[in-house]
Picture 1 (tube, rainbow, N blue to C red):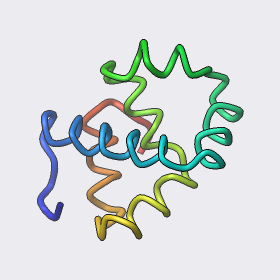
Picture 2 (picture 1 turned 90 degrees about the horizontal axis):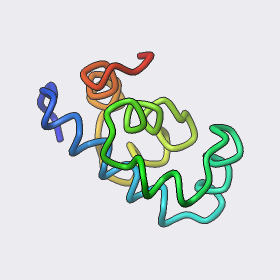
Picture 3 (picture 1 turned 135 degrees about the vertical axis):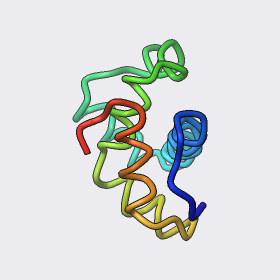
Picture 4 (picture 1 turned 180 degrees about the vertical axis):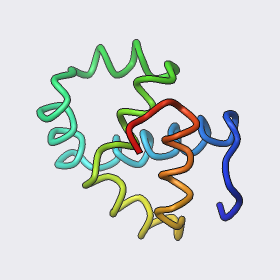
Length: 87
């Protein structure tokens, strides 16, 4: 995805990143440990903007997701901003 994300695109990027995260047991466990969430919380909050922004704040995911999907980190950072994240 190369265009600057609007809110809807930002949510799509974040959901794709969350799906990507879920495919790697190691990365998922690291995310849960660092964020303090458990699998039930992930399922419960997966559609919430602030949670999706937190997913995009996870640096390990950012690098792997961008490499795997050929998405520029700048686009992910812009999506994070649209969702109210820290970037």
